[in-house]
Length: 247
Length: 390
Image 1 (spheres, rainbow over the protein chains, first blue to last red):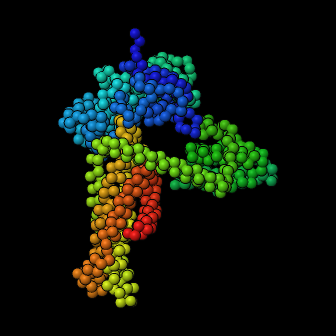
Image 2 (image 1 turned 90 degrees about the horizontal axis):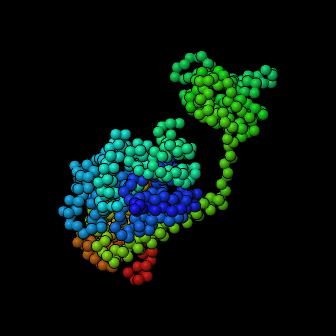
Image 3 (image 1 turned 180 degrees about the vertical axis):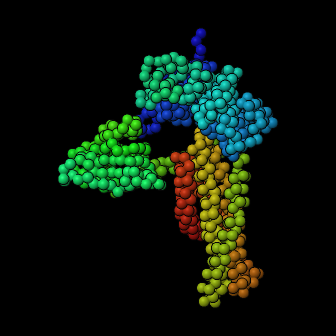
């Protein structure tokens, strides 16, 4: 029996109204339990596509199904997916613990002590149990990303969207974050959709990926990272060459 | 070399001349070319640019090449200027190539596109008044569209909260009210006291001309309670809280915090805007009332020290002049101004785009819009209350 899909994208076009689409006619599926990468150079539309997938933007055209519930609807029901934004998007006036507690308080009637227990368990998952009472400004870049992942996990999502988790991090911290993502994904049985252009992350944690091309304004290849890296298509091989620092 | 095309030398120092703080370079007009020599770099870029223009200005078509044969070194800035000059000449119909570059310089020529056909400079289109008016109208329309959408979102959020009051973010109200209210008390008290004092001082002399100096309590009292205290309080709240709301929400917007709220199932308007509106709706009348008291006290001080009216007599006169309706109209204005300030600040915060500069622009716009709106609202309220006989 084939693995069920948790995300289906059919003929999707995304961009800003009144301007040429950034991505046209995108088609791909994300299977349960896999780490799916959205790859592409700067300006290829991968972050805009992600914003459509999580419901922050309306697609220009096409069909989208997230977790079998059709297009994502925000503020309607408890989100079954978590989102980690590029810079973390933690609320600066709240402590790390309060940031993680926020969605739990929004969607459950748990008493305060129980919320605190859940929060501590999430922070322990990402190795931040000591940072519960710190403000985000007191954390390093890598710790902020971990805290954002903890918040994204707070509602026990089936699907996790990560927007460039490695951006702004040094290679060591970036590799540690990759290990954390894979560990959590396997332990919690998550499906992860990851936007990245970091070659290390692509080969280390991505099972399958779709490559977006700015010039072509579409998905030019879908497959495993190794298959794409060996592609004869100049647009695909060119991306991997540039991402590895080649000319 | 033709006699009519005698070499002309640019103003740059001679090659090989003293190389202190100023690097040496030369530019000369040759036969259909500008001969460059020495070190071309950022330290001499301004003089190089001037010399190149001086020597190329009178260059006749069809050709004027830039000869780098004598150039020992060139940096990116100088190369960019040479490529730019080439494009300018091409726009004037003069063919121009960068020639004579040594093998060492060739990569830089290629990097800056000096080998490729020059891109002709498009003459910037002049924007006529009609086009500017059209653009301004479109911008105003977009602004109005945003404002209407914001009002719609507020109404929807308000409806949601009225249906389920527990879904409001009311826990944020006390801290917001504290920041907007208690922290602003000293400045409000000082300003309103001074306004009452000045009002009393100015009116005392005029009233004394008619022997009506006792009426200073009436003038100050009614002016402060009905108009000046709500206005001055609102001005302070605009500068403090309106700007702060715009900056806070604007920063949250550019750092994707509002997007994060949405993906966690929060309605940002309900979560961020309604508590701020509630906070200023509470704080506005309270600050106005405090402003009433100190404003009247400022006028009383003038009565005591300048007009020899005792505090008891001043208060007795005040009682005959001010009615509860006067105080109530001021408090209603205070609440309405508070709501308006909160909405304007939040609206500009949500409309923020473009990073830190966008936050700054929206913060400034918030204060200006608040001041304008407050004066307009005050005028409308004054007319409205008079029509009601209040």
